[in-house]
Image (cartoon, rainbow, N blue to C red; front, side):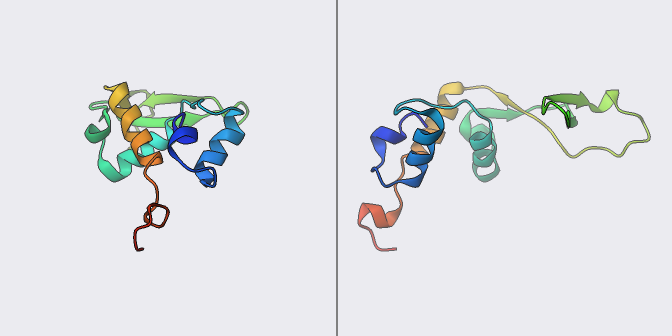
Length: 116
């Protein structure tokens, strides 16, 4: 998101959201939120990630603190149902960075003067 202030016009709502959140132009935010959304659309390998193999389990979130921890299937009680969750491993940070910034900086057709 650090490129939004340079690659999008001032009226871009994503740009303004990042400025409001970070407090300054040119600052990014480390988060898996954008990456997981991008993986859902393009697949893990296309954005520099890999779905961990042989790592089935689930993400446990502490209801008090919000902290989270990956719990391996092997650590679960055998009577518990099998989870359909997996986790992503970052293999190429630059590829992931470029994929996100390229999408964030891609203006909608109407802003590029193209017919919608």
